[in-house]
Length: 195
Image (cartoon, rainbow, N blue to C red; front, side, top):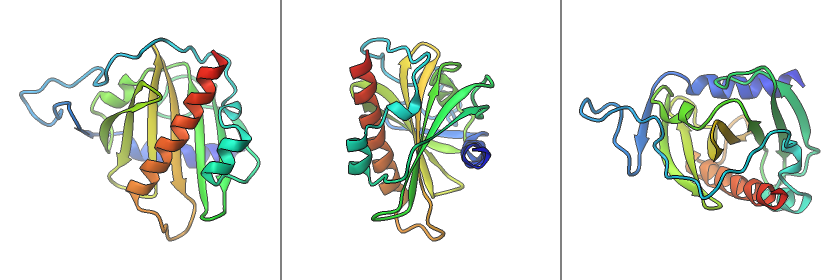
């Protein structure tokens, strides 16, 4: 399981340092614009994720639709940039029609403001997932993954990381972000059914 978390930690560490916000929000690089504490719209309601198993958030049918045919693997441990030592993460893999992996993390120790604070090496865009505010983070130094972070409750986020596992990725970062968005929609659909 250490390899699963090591890959995710590397991906998230690549994000941590400085960020450009796109969309309707001003860029923190603009000296006249204050750095946002939360650049996202209000959520329609709070959906607490304490104790939710991340492996339960993508059903077998959803995994088949996303091309994730490997058995889900659960891991619990630290995951930068989130505080706390017990962040549950489930890794879903697929090989047909392309080699990809999706990590779904249930973060009950930090809100989306970690990503909207202007300290990531990524282009951050406000999006909506199942009616909830979310941020799409496209790393500027590594184009083989994309992350969607959904603001589900105060101090809680659902983090979906979609990455190409091919040595020479056939998918563009835009395609990876679109796939991350579909995975996030699926996970949120399941989560909302649990509440």
